[in-house]
Amino acid sequence: MITLITVLIVIAAIALILIVLVQNSKGGGLSSGFSSSNAIMGVRKTTDFLEKATWGLAGFIMVMSIVCVMIKPKTSMTLQPEIGAPAPVNTGAPDLSNTLPTLPNSSDTPAPANEQPTTPSTTPAE
Image 1: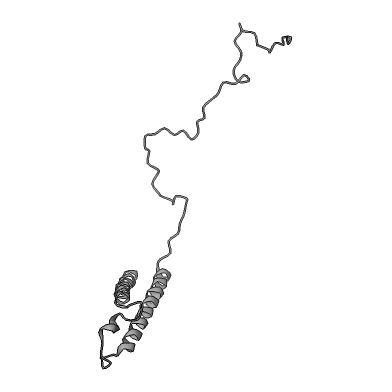
Image 2: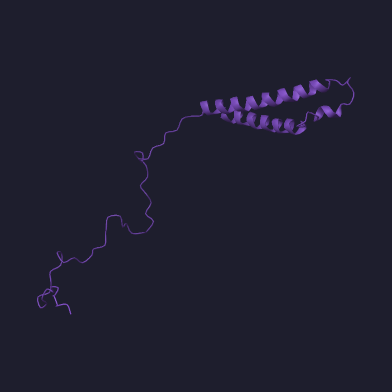
């Protein structure tokens, strides 16, 4: 059903393009080709027909677009994997999400036995 509506929208869009190209912005488009007043539809009626066809096709495209969205099946967007979903693929890269680099810290590592802790010495200022 959505495919049918989409095809109708495309056909209406192509027809709308052709009708707009036939029109002239000053009102002379297709109606300017009929120089006699005894034309089949008449000068003024041709312009009225093209204008009504433009509005009608534009409205048809708009309504069909809304209908297409209304009948489209609803899909749920879930961020959690579904039950029975396949496990993530191992890419060969190591998992570093749980390991952090360790920095030497004076509270973590004991000082060597033969070294004295250094304290800042105060020297008299000159």
